[in-house]
Length: 211
Image 1 (cartoon, rainbow, N blue to C red):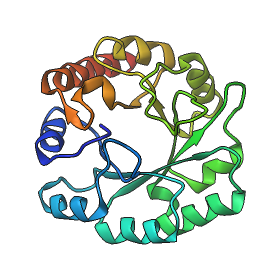
Image 2 (tube, rainbow, N blue to C red):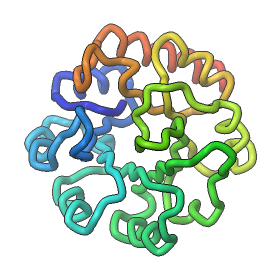
Image 3 (cartoon, rainbow, N blue to C red):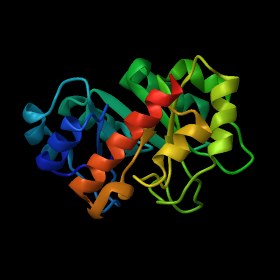
Image 4 (cartoon, rainbow, N blue to C red):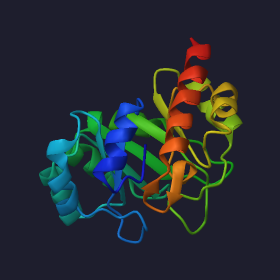
C-alpha cells in the first residue's frame, strides 16, 4: 500500500491485510512525507512493514532513510544508471531490504545482473517524465513473462491498479505482490477507506485462486 501520509490510513491498510506500508520521500510527489514526519509516526506502525519510496537517493537521503527506521527501501531509477550506483545502493541499504523499481521503457527487459543486488523488482507503467505513479495500467503480459522466466526472483506489479481490476491483473500476470496508490484514494495522499477495503478483499480472493 503506497502513498500513505497519515496514521489513520496506515493503520486501516494494515488492518485490511496490507503486506507493506509505503511512504513516499520524493519531494516532488503530492504524497511526500518527510523522514522527520515518518519518524514521528513510526512508533505507532507495525514492525517489518514500513517501506521508504524514493527516487535515485543521494548520500544525504540514504542516511536519513536509515536513521528514520524504515524496514525496506523501494528505489525508483532510470534504467540507464551506472551499475556501480546500483551496487552502492545495495550495499548501503542491504540488498535483502532493497526493492528496485526501474523506469523501464517498452521493449526493455530487466537485466539479470540486478537480481543479486535486491530482494524484489517492481515493474511499473513506463512514463517518459515520471518515476512511477502514473495511474495507468501497465503491461501485465510483460510482467508474466519476467515472472515465468525468473521464478526465483520476487516480482511486484504496479501501475493503474484498483478494486475494479486487481482480480483481472493478478489472473493475467500471476503477481502475488502488487503496489497500489491512487487507485484507492479519495484525493492525493488521502485513502478512500471503502476502496482500500474492497481492494484488499479482491486481492485476497485473487491470490487464493492462484494457489
